[in-house]
Length: 339
Image (cartoon, rainbow, N blue to C red; front, side, top):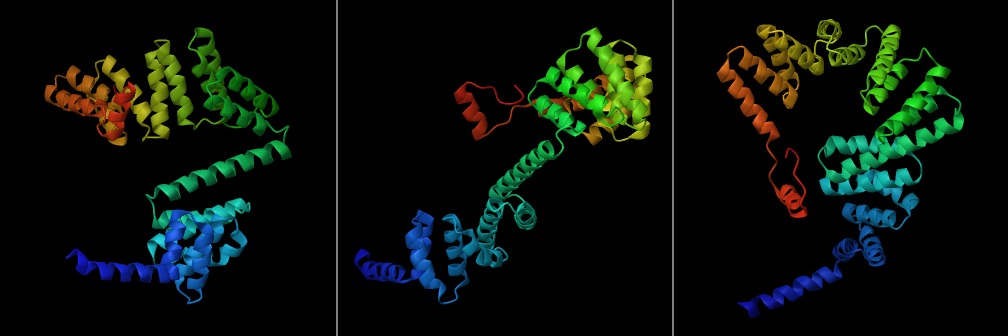
């Protein structure tokens, strides 16, 4: 049987070696770009769309985007999914290299529509947004260095780095330049809260939130933040009033529903608490706080079957994930999320 198949195998290998397209593809996948280009140029003479597409990919991979662009532009709309995906990704990289961010964004939007779960497409999208963010920040600092927006942006960046005192200082500079700009007092108040919960800082944050509310009375998130400070001071009735106002402005505000539900539970208004917390769970089904608060409201109302159901939901949410990554964490001595 082995002897019978050998001649066929030799013929197949000989055909592969004599076919410039197959040889070019093999060289491309091995990373041998000179051999890939040589063979694919030969194959492309026969007007094979695969040869033209992979020749363009080879040119792009070796930095010759200008030469590759026309073929890539045609190939990324190919009916062949893999050719379309690879050509589109290469075209995006070429457009980014030339600084054509808008062109790259348009191509990526098409790719995301075709391949919404593709890791390479999503990765390139992330790179694009980071590039656009960095370029825009550079322009902001270059063109309008004295603008309050520069201080605001600096504060937001410092917040992400956990430098809350420094962020607060930048927000204060921004407010000094434009005291009527929306969102600045809110950002300052939040940065203060993130730094510490001392009575002095809570009072300063409250003043900032009240200043924001004076500028924008319809801001439900500011009302929620004010309510949180009032709760911290044990002023539950005043906090409940602010939460009611927040929910009148935004009825689908799960955090406000949870906070008000807890207050109603403490006041033994179990039916109202349950109604509020059921809405919160529906809006935020993966919120541990919502399920826990609803479980306690059911328990206080004597509805033990419902309380057990919420306990089961809570246990499921808190259950450590299983799988390869969890096992990997265990080997490193790290705790998986939820433990």
